[in-house]
Picture 1 (cartoon, one colour):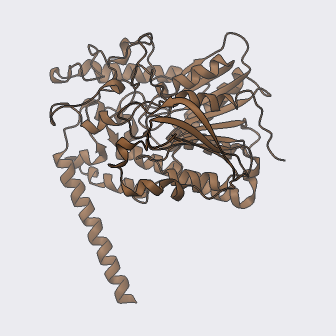
Picture 2 (cartoon, one colour):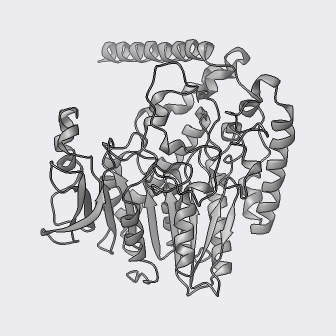
Picture 3 (cartoon, one colour):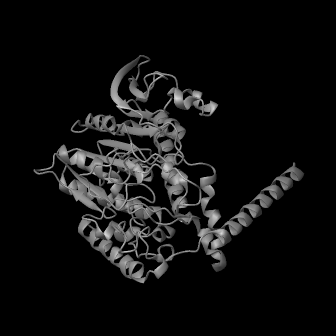
Amino acid sequence: MVKWLKRAAALLATLFVLVLAWRVYDALRAPHLELWHTVVPHEATAKQIAKLDWAGYVALENKLFDEVRTEVTDKLAPEDQVEANRYFSGSPLYPGRFEHDWNRSYIMKPAGTPVGAVVLLHGLTDSPYSLRHVARHYVRNGYAAVAIRLPGHGTVPAGLSTVEWEQWMAATHLAVREARRLAPAPAPLHLVGFSNGGALAMKYALEALDDPALAQPERIVLFTPMIGITSMARFAGVLGWPALLPRFDKAAWLGIVPEFNPFKFNSFPVNGARQSSLVARRLQAQIDRRAADGSLQRLPPVLTFQSVVDFTVSTRAIVNALYGQLPANGSELVLFDLNRSAQFRVLMRPSTETILTRLLPDPPRSFRTTLITNRNTGTDQVVARTIEAGSTTETVRELDMAFPPGVFSLSHLAIPFPLSDSLYGMRPDASDEYFGAHLGEMATRGERGTLIVSIDTLARMSSNPFFDYLMERIDAGIGVRAQPKP
């Protein structure tokens, strides 16, 4: 036994050394770091954020963007002053030239007294831009919308190299406090979270169950929430260890990519992945503990929108680790299927044939389940196949919607954006503000090595052809007060 343990330890040590060697090699080959990778804006700490009100947070945020302008934009080398750089003031992608810089925190209010409030939490490397359509929809329904820029985001990618997840949670608490100020109880309060923001929304809701000082949400809406993480993600921080030596500073980055997106970072530091994994791990522990002690019975309904295939988060974890533990409290899971029309079936992996049976437990389930899928394999037209909570009977509803030509699935990025979104939409609305590019409209066909980014980056689906159905399901919960169990 001892001999076997020694061999296993030696093997693990060898693998560890090989991984670090690979990271060193990879760092030496990576592009050089630019100002936006090395200038770290001075964000408030979690303790400082906890003492701020909304006006104070925005004031500090304004200083951050001033810092980016003076330390990055005003100091760009001539070779970096190109149209493809969002930090060049002469670029059409420069956020400072837009009518509204959606990298910043914002509040939207209805014309009259708000009937409720919603807090919107964006994802990792993202910005408040990603939930602007959802925010506007809530406002049209009389809600005040509070969308906060989470620390480390919106400015430069280097901001994520030092951020800590506790800062994100402190900002979440601040946003909820402001939402409650705009629409005091008993007006309904909703939490909306996208990806990592979904994990923060769930974590806040669980914390609020036993803390009378925290405003309790009455509905939670999640877009591809980061509920589960891969085994490798647990050790994301290890990949940055070589960066402790100045020569290998690029090892602190999982990706060093040109910054052409005005509202989302393309480059990705190791620390960002590590902090996100810490949130997911702590959230999962909270869910397990709450399920064991029965307090999940007091959780408000959760509505989740998720693609059956997702390169960023685990769909299986959403089904098993979250929905598998929820009580019968009116929660719902909406899944967007692959496009199973005849033109794609021949090219799909064999495993896609059974992906749904492997994801979902057999009914009856404690939650409502809807699958948006092809009417049949001969068409791109889709239907909604729904099984109510506690039922085994499926109802089929025809939808006047279809997969756009050439689209074989949604992606993690696509869920909260309509096809009309100016930046990410496949059919951008000409009446919307132009943000320097129509990234979602680009049909990238050509030769390798010509563009400054990989073809994969632009080929990934970035808008949701079923966005109207998503809004319809959100509408079903707007104004409907949840009734938590005693």
